[in-house]
Amino acid sequence: MSRRRGVLPSVAAGLALSLLAAFSAAAQAADIEVELSGRFSIESRLYPDSAQHPGQRSHASGFTAKPELYAEDEEGRSITVSPFFRYDSADPRRTHADLREAFLLLYGEAGDGEWELRLGVDRVAWGVAEVRNIVDIVNQTDLVEHPDEKTKLGQPMAHGTWSADWGVLELFLLPWHRERTYPGRAGRLRSEFVVDNDRATYDSAAEERHMDWAVRYSGSFGLVDLGLSYFDGQSREPVLRPVVLGNAGNFVLQPHYEKIRQFGLDAQLTTGPWLFKLEAIRRLGASNRPAPENGFQGEEDDFGAWILGGEHTLYSVFDTEAEITLLAEWHWDGRGAERATNAFENDLFLAVRLALNDVEGTEFTLSVAEDLDHAGRVFGIEAKTRLSDNWSFELEGTAFHGVDWPDDALYGVRRDTYIGLNLVYNL
Image (cartoon, rainbow, N blue to C red; front, side, top):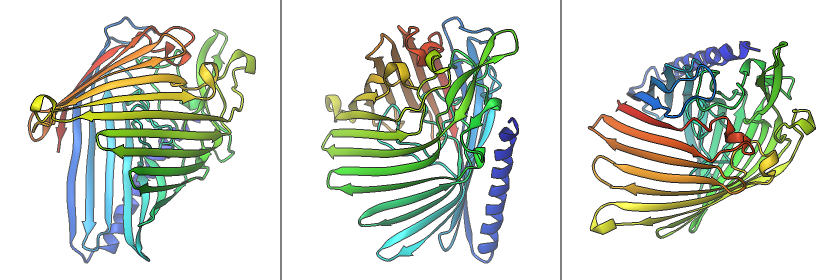
């Protein structure tokens, strides 16, 4: 199954070249505006606690590159190409490349509204919550990039949009499934056992070539912004089944991707300095956490999950331009602590963000997520500021406290408290 790793980059590269050729042929007689931008960073992570597993280091450094090429002709047709590359000194699995975006954009009028068509590789984001977005299911999670599950891989798609006064209707055809990335044996912030993507399996006989699809409606109704979505296809979150290697009794985790359906709702109510947020899903066909009683295979367990949250902003703090935002969210998974496949089965998140609103864009955020069923807590800190027009500095840190065996989802990272420093150049 290792063939999958090399197939998509080749397909994506060929697709990007084909799109460039098509765009060039369609607009060869027109003036084309070209823009080059990007983000490049030098990064370092420090882990003060001793490692849980052999081969893991207390320090990792590396760099990332995410250039972006945008070209548009005089009729408004455009193409965007944005590859991504990371080098990491400690974990070979974290050294990786991806085509985040490579799509052709066409648009026009449709009655009283407009239509838009994106063909190629793209990323979309659904949801309104701060910590994680349970409705966001089109793109696969790039877990080696960050444990917060918000960074996504590029997804091959045909994305059609129809918008008018009544709202926005979107249809997605997704012809290729991406496997989730995981840290390697030497990587920090990994599970107790290593996930072996070479052993990935699928419900569908078509495997990664299964045609997934999704549809979403979004609109504004007074103070409320509403999104309704439906997804039918291969789950982006695999079931991780333990597999014994040889006679030594060593375990790895085998990812299995199931065919699921998901109904999603996201809504935000904005009233003055207050924001009230809701995300809710109903997922059919997914399995719960593998356990001895089900032969470590997981059992099909249709479930619901939701996030309730709110924000309140205090403006002109101490008669300055600064503002403070208070955030709170409650994450709940109907499968409960023993069967849920993620760490947010019943968790409370609290945070405070200070934005100075200065020319440097300086911000500080402090947060804590507490497991209401167990004693585990996750503390977070973020800070960022611009050093010049092109250079900026970012700091982030995560600390795990009180994580014990019952909280399986975090047990493997209980010694992976870290502080990260990033020096960023924006082109």
